Amino acid sequence: MKFIKYSLILVVLTLSTACSTQKETELKIIANSWVGYSPLFYAKESGWLAPLNIQLYTVISLGESLNIYETAELDAFTGTQYEFTHVQQKDSTLLPILLFDRSNGGDVIMANRTLKQLKNSTQPIEVYLEMHSVNQLVFKDFIQLNGLNDKTFNYINKDQLKIYTLLKENKPEYPVIIASYSPYQQKLASLGLQKLASTQDGDGLSLLIIDALFTSKEKLLKHQAQFTQLKTLINNALIALKKDPFEYYQKVKPYLENTSYPDFLSSLEGIKWLNQPLTKEQERRLNNIQFPTKDLL
Image (cartoon, rainbow, N blue to C red):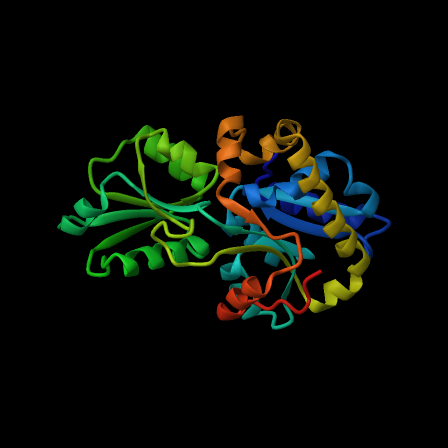
């Protein structure tokens, strides 16, 4: 299985740091299982990262990714503006250097009730999400836009795979809301849960979610050439995706919990790639959420 457990990653990182003769130049990146980061997975499986001395570690959840980045002292991590803001409070030099995509339906609110039923419910509502991640922003946006602030919410902090497994094994009779994202939203839909809102334009959420690669100013200066080459590899991976989606899928599917090909294609519809120069409108929207762009490669 491609996803490495937290403790095992720490052991591997320790050993690689101790044994590597090129530890000063090795670039260590952590990413979680999100279709928007799949160009990194494709680059790794294509053998493109090793010659550049880039090591990619992968985990399931956003929370894991952030914890490992901070505790194992890695060089860069993937995430959204939520993770960026969180880490920047500890490291003011943190900055985004590579954009992957913006969510356009890839982040969703799902439930076992209709929106009307939730509004009329007097029961406490259980909310499954990854706490301390962009899931919180998605959920907050949803309840504010739909006037649900007066409801009683019981929060269950689980990664997306555990949420799916838990709900599959124990179908709840009480009201449930899940903040999720691709490819897990397709898995949740297979359990009968319905989508109430998403980040697709006009689909019930106003939140702009950006996926990017973040690093510190010091690490950017140290690994400038590698980051620049990585940008080229991401572009090449997206060219490969456009040319042969199935070949691309076969390489990245182990990182996406072996999502089916139809679900993979559906996941792609939920994002808009941002590997090209930003338009003025895109820059305006990023400025509105105080997302810095001056150091983007």
